Structure formats: C-alpha cells, structure tokens
Image (cartoon, rainbow, N blue to C red; front, side):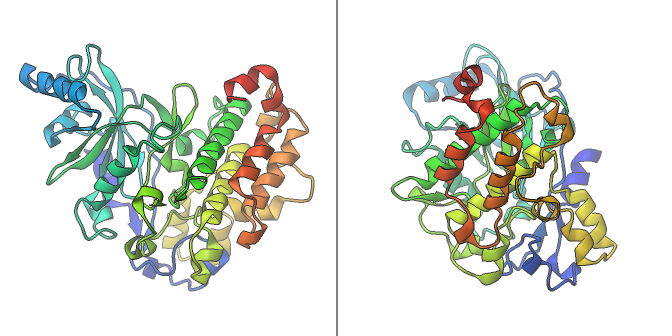
Length: 398
C-alpha cells in the first residue's frame, strides 16, 4: 500500500507552481493551452509477480473461453477479474505510471482463456488523471479499444495486442497479451541493455511510426515517451499508450486532446509555443528524444525535475535535465554522443556513432521543416553498420 499511495498521490505538479513564464518557450515540453498542469511521471520498479490464487470459478472460465472462440472481439472483464490478474494491483507488480494511469504485470490462471497460465500486462486509468482531460468517463478506454481492434493497423508487431477490457465504475482498464521485460524508461540506463538491443528498439519503433504516418488517414501518436514504450522478452519495443492519438479511425485531433499537457521533455516545443497545427513532425521530435536517450543512456529525470521546481530553481537548471537541451550543449558536427560504455560493446561500429547522433539531432531541430520524415529516419537507421551485419540484419527484419 505504501508504494501504491506514493505513486497515486504525487503524480502531478500544476503549471501555476512553476512561476516560470518562459519555460515552455525554451522547450520544457508542455502545451501552453493545457489548463491542467504538468503530468510528472515517476519510475516504477522491476519485481517478479508473486503467486496468486484464481478468483474465477469454472463457470466464469467457460464463459471467457466461449467468448474467445465465438468472436474475435476483445473480452470484457470485471473489476474483480483485473484485480485477480494483478494480485489486487499489488505495488510490487507495478511497472510504472503512465500519463493517465498505471501499468502492472499480471497473470491469467490456467483455464481462463487457455489451458496454460498466461503472463499479461494490465493498464488501468487513474480517475484523477483522466478526469482532468476527458469529460466522458469511458472515452479514453473506448478509443483505445477502437484503435487496437482496427484490422488495418492492429497486426503491426510493435503495437500491443489487446485481450480484453474492463468498463467498471471504479476500475477502467485493459489487458494486453504482453509478457513484458520492462518499460524503456526503466531500462535505458541499465548495463544489461546492450548496443544492438538499443538499435533494434530504435529501428523497430521508427518503422512503427513510419507505418502509422503512412496510412491513408495518417495517425499521430503525440504521446510518445520512453515510459509509454514497453520491451518484450526479445527486446522488441511495444507501444501501449494512446491517450493523445488522433487520425485514422479516431478522426481529427479533438479540442479536448489539444488541451492535454504532453509528457515533459518529449513534447515538440516549437508547436507547443506557437500554437500551430500538430502534425507528424511532433512525433519525429519525440522519437529524436528516444534515440538520443538510447545512445547516451539519458532519460528525462522527472524526480529531479520536480525537486528543482519545488526548490524554485532557475529555468536554466531545469533545461539541462532535458535530453535535447543537454544534447545541444554537447553536440559538435561529426561528433558522437554515444555513451562510453556502449562504445566498448563488441557490436559497436565507430562509424555508427556520429551517424545516429546526427540523426537524433536532426529529429529535435527546433523548426519542424528541418526535421526528417520517419521514412528518412528508417532509411538512415537501416544503413547503420550494426544493422547491415548479416546476423543482426536478420534480427531487425532486414
């Protein structure tokens, strides 16, 4: 309970507490239209799932199996069932908060949807978070189910696969077919996360964005954040947060979504401060933050950010915590921002460092017109020597 309450009670710092009118213009990363403040994320921790007893009886199991056989539609779970999957949302099964809620490791007992037990991921929406953004209790859930059941996109290997959902009064959530390793945010600074695995994440996530942007009615994610990307057991990046998504089957970006602050450090500062139309360049900027973080082992440190805000420190001391601002200070033409420990990796090619560094810097260019498209990003990443190597090329799908 202690860890649970710590996450639920300290999720936000309202913009009014900053008293720094020029923060956004320098790229801190929140929408000037948002009235609801800055959504601060806190890192979760990796813990194994504890043993749990099933709360289902045979009748419930048979019903779920019957539904799965008779229809391709996602299953509808009860609040009690989601609690059972996560051992009553036990704190040590918490992976991390998202912008609108929390993500947990879960397990579905044998006989519920198959003969074997199944490791799953459960995401629930935090009422305090989503009520600030969505006037309708179920709109964010319904839109996600709609998107993840759209046959034109749901086959993509880097989009999370939906098992079912819960439209409860007190619990609103989804159950994913995902045996995750951890969030990208939690893994970025880990020594066990090697160079090739990082490049694999960059390539496959770039291809996902290229795919979404390339639809007849393009999708914009807009909520890209290292905390919104999970890695499965094979180090594949899986996008699972869609709270700000628009386009495609979801339609144009709504006024409500325009009012929602994005994740600090990932939001395109140019469009946030000019009020221009959000477009694919915003996703490119966020992807640039992901790439620079992957190669430099840096994250947007929200704990330190919150501390400095509380201490009323100057904007300058906040800016250096942002990955793009740090990169701009360190970058020189043809240099590499790859972390020294990764340069010692046996799969690292010295020629790749400056190339991927320059790509990351292009993605976070202040003016959107100077950024590459995701198609250009994919082409650049696929040209890296580590990807061109036959064995590695096969693993990333070359």
